[in-house]
Image (tube, rainbow, N blue to C red):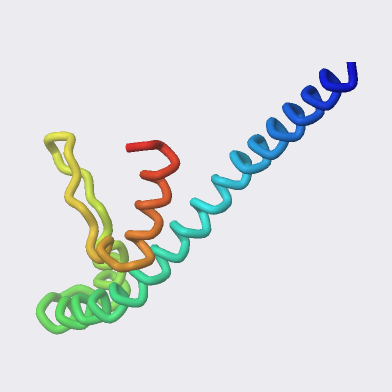
Length: 108
């Protein structure tokens, strides 16, 4: 009888631990994604600024208009055919770590 109780307790403990781990996975993914996007932003900000400066110099647009035009430059974009053009700098170590964590979690 004690063996069954011990086995049941062990199974309950394992299930509780697995549930806690699966609940923390989205938080971990969010942290890794945030680190990736922060690292990308460090690289993209000066390039966006350069594009904005060029726009102001070569067009009749205001700085605000040019900033709006290039605010999301370098991000992933949807294509008319339904595909997507990958954003820039997803090859940074922080982004590779986020992608690897998701790959391991899904087994893909």
